[in-house]
Length: 365
Image 1 (tube, rainbow, N blue to C red):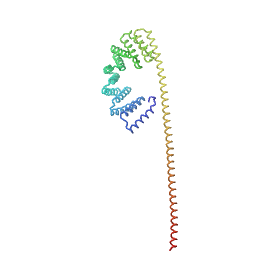
Image 2 (cartoon, rainbow, N blue to C red; image 1 turned 180 degrees about the vertical axis):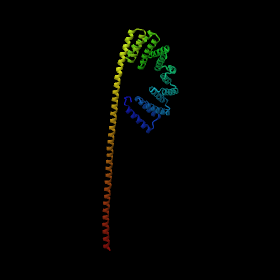
Image 3 (tube, helix red, strand yellow; image 1 turned 120 degrees about the vertical axis):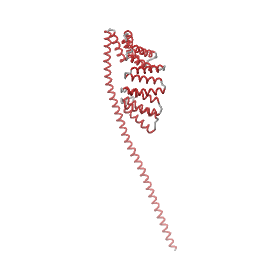
Image 4 (cartoon, one colour; image 1 turned 90 degrees about the vertical axis):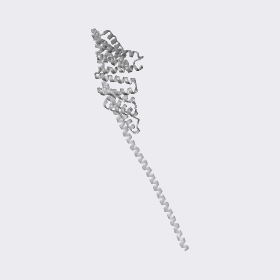
C-alpha cells in the first residue's frame, strides 16, 4: 500500500479475510483488516468503497468492544465526507466520534472532535457554531499541559475565523496566542513551523486591516525572513503578498511594486514546478501500473508453472502407484503359479504313491 501497489495490497487484504473466515479471527483483528482495506480505498480515492469498509470495521470493533478502533474509523469517515463536501454526513461522523471520546474520557480526542465539528460549521458558514466548538477545543486542550499542537491549531483557527467575520481585534488576540503557544515550545516540528509562518503572515494582514501599518510591517518582514530561512515557498509567497498590500496601503508604491514583482516571479516558478510535478506524477503512475502488470504477469507465470509441476507430480504419483500395483500383481501371480505347481507336484506324488500301493495290494491278494 505504501509503495502505491494498490492491486497487490488488495490481494493480500482479500487473503487475510479468506483465511479469517476459515480460522475464525477475532472481531478486533477483522476490524483492523477492514480498516486497512478502508485506508486502501481512501488512498485510491474510491471514497464510497472506503466508507463501506470502514463501516464493516466499526461493526467488528463494536462487537469486540474496541472503542478506540470505532473512534479512529469514524474520524476517517468524517475526513472522507469533508473531501466529498458532504458536510451533513461529516458532521454526523464527528458527533458520533465525540460520543466515543467522551466515553473514553480522553481530553485530546474530545478536543479533536470539537475542532472537526467547528471546521464543518465554518464550511457551512455557521460561524457562531464554529467559534463555539473551537472555544470548547481550547478548553480541553488547555487542560492537557503537553498537547500544544492542538492548542496552536485552535488559536490559528479562531484568529482566521474572527478575521473572516470582521472581528479584527479578537483575530489579532487569538493569533498572538498561537505565537505565544509556539514560543513556549523548545523546538518546532515541520508542521508547527508552518503554523508559525502562517500566524506571522496572518498578523501582518490583520494589522493592515486595522490600519496599524508599522506593526503590520514588523510581522510581515519577520514572516518573510523566517520563510526564506526555512525555504518554505508557499509562505514566502504569502509574506510577499502581505508586504505588497501593506506598502500599497502606506502609499509606499516603490516598495509595493518590488514585493508585487517578487510575488509574481515566485508564483510563476511555483506554477512551473506544479506542472513538472504533475508530469512526474503521471510518469510515476505509469511506472507503478507497469510494475503491477509485471507482478501480475509473474504471478500468472508462477501459477502456470505450479500447474505444470502439479501435473508432473500427479503423473509421477500415478506411475509409482501403477508400478507398485504391477509389482504386487506380478508377485501375487508368481506365488499363485508356484502354489499351483507345488500342488500339482504333490498330486503327482500322491497319485504315484497311491498307484504303487494299489499294485502292492493287488500282488498280495
